[in-house]
Image 1 (cartoon, rainbow, N blue to C red):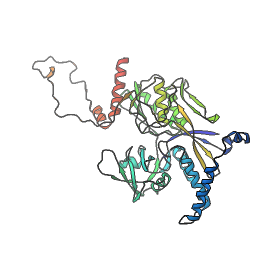
Image 2: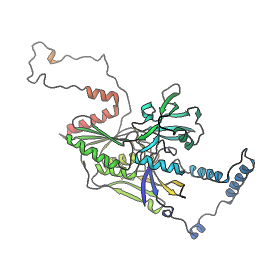
Image 3: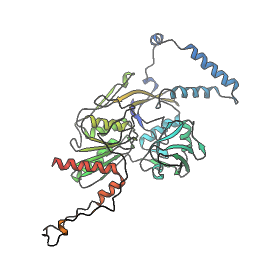
Image 4: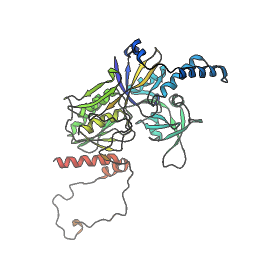
Length: 435
């Protein structure tokens, strides 16, 4: 039995805080192929000098470290170091970490509600999750966390930082963050809570253009998107904006399901790796709700992994216009391999590719139309042009006074979310041209 997930961005973004990305779970250790004696014989001989060095370091620590060290703990720490040296997404999972991973993909977990990773010895915020304590407190993607309460995090193991950020719901923690554009570090108070994430939200932007926000890819996100779309379609839809900004990833099957919602045929994503079962292909079916509805997909630097799969598939299939900023560039698959009843290994086992054969790893999805996030304000000194209706004796219009051409809602949207405002304008233009 296997279920496939997507893993996050940067360094092992564990887990009670949040998890992102593309990962697959092996149900038993027997699922993992074990090399036979002949294979081992044909492999390069073991590096004896390095093994002797390992043994010597082990013995030196045992005999000379300032405090006694347990053999089992030393070996477990060695395992962690060996796995951490592979890539930023492979990890050694203890029971609590694995339980938290499963809780996160189901949509409920404890913590602050941020995706984090290690960068230059500090904890970097990949993205705050929608409607969580961190987002409400003002934590932003890209923030560099330097202190957790009074604990400096430089050089701290990510799992230790995660442990410090966990706590009882209702308890408080002070995050000291360095933010680009700010002269001094900011202190942000966040109240811990049980994180219950609604992965899909929707609304109408105007009478014909719908807005779908997917904040992360949970087990049921594909079904949720379909449910929201069916409700929105009662409004005679002419276009839809799919917002994947700051979406760090999640369950692979949900990404495939959401891609299938908008595609009627063709490839969505495929994976390639060294293990035979890491070669997989996922295609669209003809059972799609809106195969021809004009679409804009919004992405940014916080869009990772599963988000990039969906955006890449829709871009390659010429199904949607991708707008915003280049995505994060997380293009690898992690498999969770049980080691014992209480331990597991999260190991990078494959890369994934868009339908056109593009690897997103360390490259990301480049938008068709780049739109930077901006704040705009209306000028108060703009010139008011003289109009026909201002002239004395002008002819009256029989419909005068009946049409309200107010754009107050559009102006408000431009001030609040400029990228979404541009997406709405583009879809309106497409609808006009199609008419």
